[in-house]
Image (cartoon, rainbow, N blue to C red):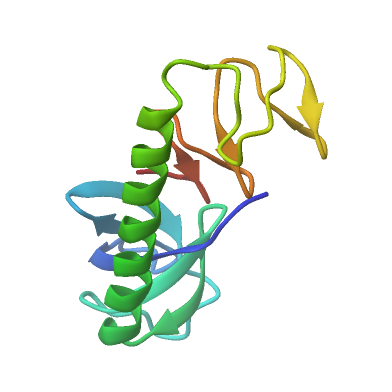
Length: 127
């Protein structure tokens, strides 16, 4: 499962089809060809490396705030599960290299398809 995330456009390449977008100092190249007249400073929803929708700054901030809350909760739950690294976040114990609803859980913890390992990967953006 992939998630789309809001990013801020900070550079627009001369070809006007690619841009550099960032969040929390992490910059990624994104394709902006789906956005009519993209502008530096605007927020866009990025999915799989493509800006798919322009959004208001307030909406972007609200989404990222909710995401940060979720990641904090997941980190706390993961810390509580340190004694059983083979357990997933909802307390269902699975041995390594098994699957719950098609989501593999070898040595990792997953919830809704989002890896809670130290380097989660979301919609082409490593957070």
